[in-house]
Image 1: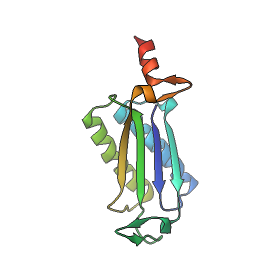
Image 2 (image 1 turned 90 degrees about the horizontal axis):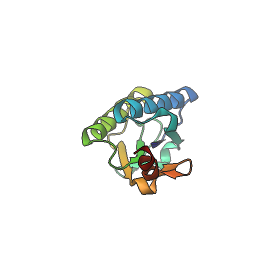
Image 3 (image 1 turned 180 degrees about the vertical axis):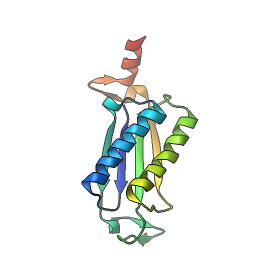
Length: 131
């Protein structure tokens, strides 16, 4: 049940937003083994001047700044899975939005199963019910 928030400092076309949502969901499925049916991808766009790198405000002529926050249940993926996800997320962003700032971050937050759930049930309860 991953939640992915992609923040960029450029306006995106509807086609690009849809491609990011589809590609991110596919990566979560293929690299992290997460079910597509419960994968949420949120995309946030802001004006370039709201972002800075090295204390310099960005503008539309600068490469795109991006920050991707991925939330998953703790201890459900290996270090190798997470490393591949971070790498492939950057490749996917470059493919979809073009040149990126060097300071383009992907963060994987691992949430304890007791603190994370959906449809009214924690991940810990779901795991216990599977036993």
